Length: 181
Image (cartoon, rainbow, N blue to C red; front, top):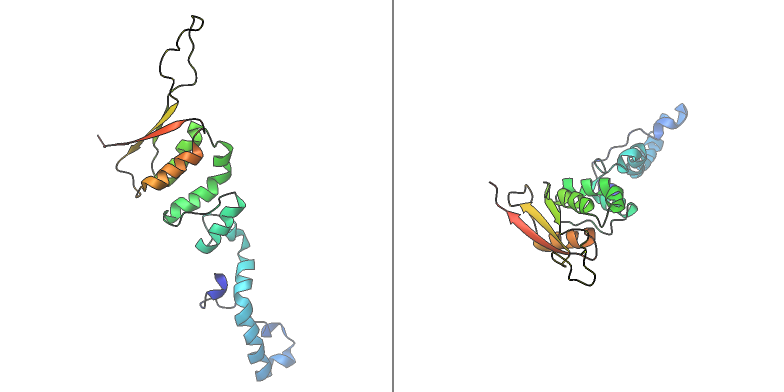
């Protein structure tokens, strides 16, 4: 937390705000320096408030709180810092396209650090003959092809969780790790 940072120096002295007669008194200036030390972290936060609301500049301990503002329940601690910041920055856009192949692809791109290939089995099937069997497969499935040389470590359980919350609810999914050619 910000208050636990012992290296935060006061940006200005409260003693310097006093009338000159009090500034000449050694006891008064030492007394006021206690307020400088206590209030320095608060003033540092207030002076830099716009950076606290920017996911790319916010301190890591504040980023998880900022994530709650955009609907992310909890940031995964195993994710790289860059992915966490990217997810918070793009969360509102991702939530607006959640449940689509494009939304799934973008969410996975943030986690993986590379863009996967997302293939859907198709939208519909029909037959020109009444009461006939439908052509093709009746299985709705999304196939996700992920390059095996992704720049980040991939945890299969976390990957499954991301896919489950980002894919269309009625579809199953299959993950294929592809070898680089």
